Image 1 (cartoon, one colour):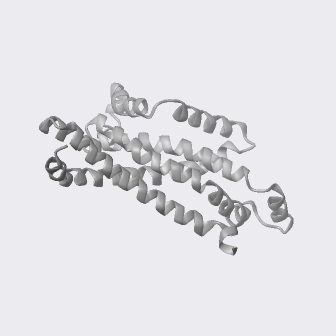
Image 2 (cartoon, rainbow, N blue to C red; image 1 turned 45 degrees about the horizontal axis):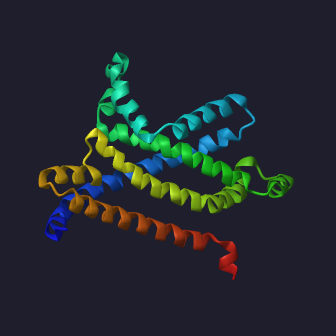
Image 3 (cartoon, rainbow, N blue to C red; image 1 turned 90 degrees about the vertical axis):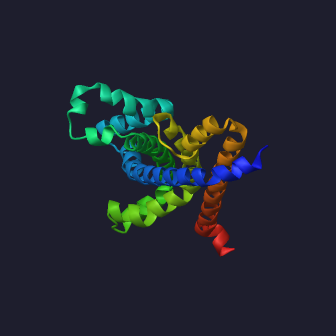
Length: 228
């Protein structure tokens, strides 16, 4: 094990880390925005909403993320209508295509996490809110959503960590994230063990930090532990 090579590779890998962090943060943000309406649509009494939301979740949970990235980056460019549209400046860029794929993917998984959290709220509390005259929006904001996020946080935290690791697929479409930089350095130095070990350590540090933050949030939102 050549530790000198590992140390020399660290600055370049840190440069890739910033791209990884930006990609993951934006994907989680957009995915969160997608997930809540999708979860509500999945629980809607309106059949068309349930069907559309269910089809979206079924596709993005049932197909590999790598395939989704390839379909968006390589597949959409095959259509002349896409190339001639105002969306082409976005869809021709690997960063935005990867971001779209990651956001749609995590949005589907997070929607199911939120749906389970909403279903976990005792129905008698919802009935009580209606009995005192709360509107549906007020009941959701004051009763359903706080309990939903508390119940969903562990699973959502796991999804956040999985998204960090899934972001390594961005290197398959030429993005120089942590994995992309590591791949380039490994081909230049012919020392893949050292380079990929350092990349793995960066991923480990990142996911460990995220897990600790999530754990602190879980403790803060744990009503039973707070009262004890």
